[in-house]
Image (cartoon, rainbow, N blue to C red):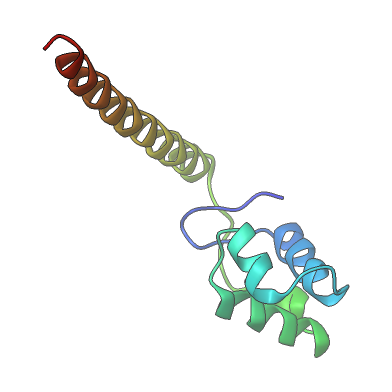
Length: 104
């Protein structure tokens, strides 16, 4: 399932997310947490599915261009790299602090 970070979701993503909830395997809250999706959005999709209108959601939006897809991918990659950097900073500070205590 692919999800775009700018709030646009593919039809496949919406259908799979709704299927998780409708088939009763997990709650809407748990599914939204696992998919990093607002709970209210998922609940709206479930209501639309039950009314037979899930296919119409997002139909007014224009498709994303290749540049927008690339930008989305780069933004996700940058966020991951920043998170890794922050973890390494904390680890380096921790071990530097530990080595100071060990030399005294």
